[in-house]
Amino acid sequence: MNAFLKLVTLVTALLLSTVTLAEQKKTLGDWDVHYIAFGTTFLSPDIAKANDIVRSKSNALINISVLDKDTQAAQDVIITGSARNLIGNNKPLAFKQVKEGKAIYYLAVLSFDNKETYRFSIDIKQGKTTQTLQFQQMMYENER
Image (cartoon, rainbow, N blue to C red):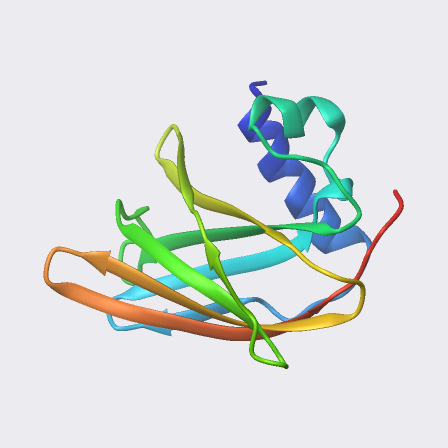
């Protein structure tokens, strides 16, 4: 099993085992956009290294996937965005595209302070179509 598939498996297990969350999905135009932000310490050192992710109690991984809402096929898009904390400090997010078979994921790392809330604004572009994903999340340090 390659490193990214292990990452996806870990994220899924994390969602199912540690906290019961509502599905983090928004339908934007013709897309179903799935998103999650979680501490990088939940990643194993091997998975983090294979995906060039620095594990730290003050780093979060932002994972976005964009699917066609009718066919559920992964979409090859351009993603840019930023995270703004409640006092207005803005941090740009540098997304990296990862392809695994037919799946496509967009990953970015965000440094944060414990219990800091961020408002995310993510622009998703494909051709002449642009949609904006917005969500808010409080980030927690984890010593795992």
